[in-house]
Image 1 (tube, rainbow, N blue to C red):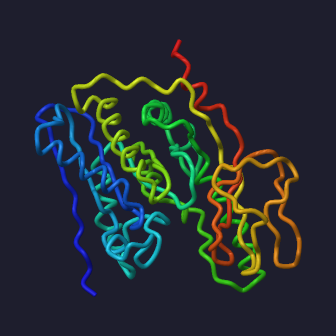
Image 2: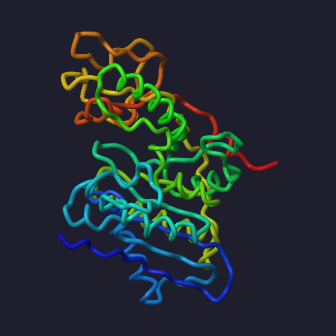
Length: 326
């Protein structure tokens, strides 16, 4: 099969400003970002939207093979262990070799996604400022300010740290079961994590359910608000959300057997009480919530040894951010 080509659309103003990249269809069946980007490019080309400062690069379809096949992945998940490679084997390796240098040319990334289950849109934040080994970062305030202006009411953080802890658990399971698993803690690195690693800041916006007709509008509004907030267009800075519900991913639970099953038809952000049964292992053991919180990213088709669902707790980080600066 001939590999589809990669395409980006770049606009540059004569005036200096922020370098922004916007991605759609990192996963091929998540097309709300594609449609929103197409709308923005049409408006720029028609003169209805004018870039007055900086640079804007739009990638309507980041994973052309998955998009053409109308499924999440081509050969594998592009949004895991994202990095250039000298020995590409899978289609997504070729995407990474094109995409990673492109991202490194920019300062800010907005990555537009959608999800399977019904639910409200939310934004995925990076870590708070830290000098740790896993994901050192110094631009949390810039990410938080943008997150408050995307038009959503919920923010989630804690992704990479929680994923790394889950990788350690999977390593134990792989050693005891003989199942070969990727247990590299950096396996959780996707577009936003890579962007932070090369000096930028980045947000993932989950715009709604895949087929929700409102999701492309959520994505479009987020792009325009980002352009205004970064002063790439002559428009007022959008008002920050007065309150953004903050949640922090705390734990990832792996599926250990093909007969492991959920006890309810969970959707992301369903609340659970401490001790509430969530699922049952194949041997009858119940998986209970260790604390009051929320089920996030439940995956009924998870492969054995891989992440099955996440647990999150309320986090006041963004509530503080919404308060006026002293």
